[in-house]
Image (cartoon, rainbow, N blue to C red; front, side, top):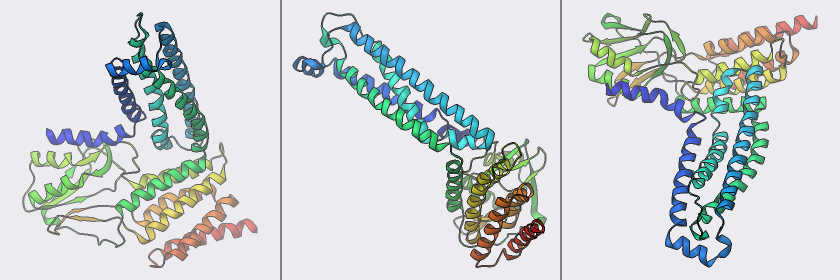
Length: 412
């Protein structure tokens, strides 16, 4: 039961921290705590003494203080609604012209969340202060220090709004979105890849036991420490049958375990807990999603309804750089325990498989376009020059020959 809870936390942790409400909730809580602390200072002997010595810090009219708070609350609420209505419109436009799978990375933008959090925090702060205003004769008891701090927050909100307008108009540009996906995918590759190619491990099939998919879902990977501990505990090897991101039907083979003894139902349940099965396309966990999203942007840009070959060229350039990285770096195919015993054998897409999945659909949609022909020809030539190990020469030469054949037929 505890392991299932940890799996649930692992599954929804990324969704929670990338949610548009995560940082606003934390920042709003911080503003609420700050308002409590400021009220303690306002009504403390130190605060009363300070306000009595500095007359400009005192608000002797409760109705004036209430008017300030209500005006600021209404103004910041309007500012918040306007700002993020504009964001939603721009996101809808980007999703319709590029891909709705871009929305996760765009909505999860930390700067937008921090701005939203500061707006909402200011509203929470002002509303909490508003509830403390009382009609009294002594202005010293009015939380003047807290109100003046709120005025400072309001000025900061206005300047944030001005910068936010500039930031949003820049962040929804196609080149900015493509660059963000490219950098995020490259970061994931650098985190998972190694410079040496792993040998394919073949387990003993005579001692193999097939584990089937409990329900139809996407295989996203597994929790490495948990799976290695399980394999070490039962002295077996776990062989994954699918690459991350694959959709596996219920009852289909998911993995194979090879060991001296057969696993019982309780053991299988414990094993499945370590496997991540859920929908979504988290690029930070699976670099394949970054490749596919860039390819999808290029294909969508080449559709007759959009007809934007320059955006497709930008995606091709980003994909080319990612494939250049894969020429010299490889995803590991095995995992070993502390004693260097191989415990997990994984299935990953090869350079050739990924290349065919990404570039051939782009070529199919854009082979009649001169922009795409030139971009893909330049891409294949540069990758051929970068492939000093000459592991993918045949693939790249065949693709280059296909492009040249199409160009020659066009010129005739």
